[in-house]
Structures are given as structure tokens and as C-alpha cells.
Length: 386
Ligand code: NCD
Image 1 (cartoon, rainbow, N blue to C red):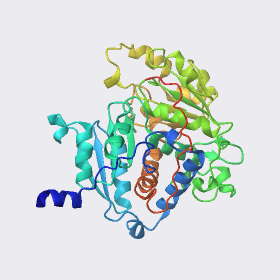
Image 2 (image 1 turned 180 degrees about the horizontal axis):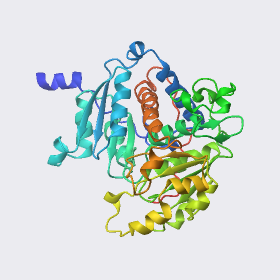
Image 3 (image 1 turned 90 degrees about the vertical axis):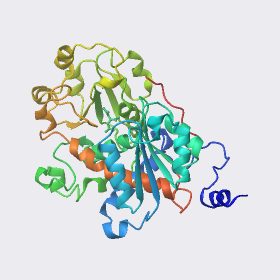
Image 4 (image 1 turned 90 degrees about the horizontal axis):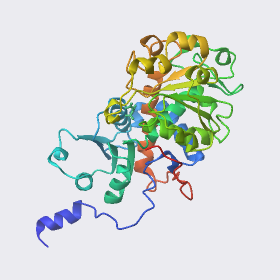
């Protein structure tokens, strides 16, 4: 063996030949998590958020996390990076525009290169559905899906859930815009004032069960067809008891979506959906995935834009969510996005806490006694749109 080869053997761990199941630290789909696993992750997110920052950065000190982004991103990329760094990990960003990906390197070779450079976990955003599974198979590293094509975006669904829970009164099982965590003491709701909700509302949900969202109706409106955010939420929220109403025109919401799983219905009349909803999640039209589809934007706005007037008339007490990026004046007006019912920036903030818990799970699962959260038999993917 040449000295170079010997060095490579010493420093580059071989890719283990073990077949699937996947690495216990990976998070490829929300269906990777049991309800107890979701509960543990959210509880851990709160613990990590409240942790002394100077001690928190010992948890993953000098561990190496690679962020591999084939699509643009602001919120997801930045929050994964800040979350990893808050735990002390070293991060490196590889984006398709400034790396050998531009020269044609494959996902597999890029993954193996990152592994050889010492990456211990890879956070992947990719324009092809299923890419995270391929990457994990190639590298055997824990892979976190940060959005794959039109398929899934599991950490977005978890941070959406955390935001919903922060607005849910556990006594009445109703959501209130003004019932929020302690970042908004001025928005105090009676349930918060009379002690039913102490401090951060999240502490009321130490345990999440299949009943936690029973009685809560969540409307998701817009470009459902192309949305990995919608899909991950559709796969997660009904498992916690929620009723999910999907709303949008046929071009962006095929009728088959109603069969996507239990607890999911289609309501094409936005006003009727709003009247039934405690949570309204708006989605942008994904122009980059429309592939020639022509939409009359004036018609779309008349039927589906969330305006102040519409919200006041049909859902004056609902909490408004949007995963971003928001296109002001298209799916949502500026007044609603910035208004008192909007929890859009809380979603962004919740992303950091959730991603701390997910990155910690990736690096400690199976190694330092962190429990693996996978269902004993992986639940089949429910009916798909993409
Ligand atoms: C979304 C995404 O990239 O899937 N945004 C996000 O991650 N917060 C939604 C979108 O692009 O419209």
C-alpha cells in the first residue's frame, strides 16, 4: 500500500456495506417519525432553545455538518446553519452554483466527497423527489431532507406544528392569534393571563399524542400540487388528530388529493374553508415548477388570495401561516402578512429550535444513546400528488 493510500484508509472511513434500513439519525420523511418521536423532538427543541448558549455549544462541538443545497433557500438554509452552530458544530455550505456540481458531478460523488472530507451528516435540498434516499444509500451518513422536489419537507412540517401548538389553548382545543409564546407578551390571551398557559405556550404540550390536534381544522390553500410543505403537513397533522382542508383550483390541486390519507378533504370554496378553520396556511404559486401551465392570476387572486376583508369576514380568529417565501399581493396581501393574525415570522424563528433538535438527533442517534424515533415498520407513503 502506498503511503497516500494508507493515509486515505486512516482518515476516510469506508462506506459500510449495510443495506437499508436507513441511518437512525436520518430524517427523510415525516413518516420516519412515530408520534412519540415527534413529541420527543418538539420537547427537545424547547429544551435546546432554553439552554444556556455557552453550554449548548458543547453538545456537538467540532462535529462536521455539510449543507448541500441544489436549490435556493433563505429560511431553511440559514436556520439549519444557525441551529448547527448553536450546538457547536462546524458547518460548510455547498451550493450547486459554486461547486463541482456545476461541472456535472453527480449527487453520489458529491456525497462521497463530503464524507471523505469528514462530514458526519448531510442536510440536503434537491430539486428531484427522492434525492435524499439516494444520497443516504451512497454515503450511509445521516441525511436530513431539507426539501426534495415536490415530495417532502419534514422539518418545515415540524416547525409548523410547533407554531400551531404555541397558539392552541389546551383547555378548549381552540387556536388564537394572540395566544402565543413569550415573545409576544403584549398579545396576551385570557388563557395565558389566568395561568392556564404558563410562560411559553409550548410547555403545555410536554407530550404530543394522536389526539393533540383533535377538533382543529387546518386549511392549506394554494399550489398544493407542487408543494412539499403541503405534503409533509398532510402526512403529519392528521396523525395528531387534525382535519386538513385543501383549497385551490383544479390545476394546482387535483381531485385525487382528497384520497391522500385519512383526515384530508378538499374544499374549493376558500371562504367556506376559512369559516371552518382555526389555522390557515397559505402557499405561494411555484412558478419554477409550473412547466408551461397557464394560470389567470386575476381569477386566482379573486378566488384564493387571503385579503384582510376575507379574513375579517370568514376567519377573524384564525392563525395565518405561510412557509415563505411570500409573494405579497399574490397569494396574500401585505396587510395580512404583517397583521395581528399572522404567525409567519414565528414560524421562521421556530425553525431554529426544531432544526437544533433534528441536527442533534442526526449526530447523536445510535451513537450517544439518543433514542431512535423510527416506527418499527415504516408506514407506507400515503397517496401522492407528484
Ligand atoms: C418552501 C420550500 O422551499 O419548499 N419554503 C421553505 O422551505 N420555507 C416553499 C416554497 O418554496 O414555496
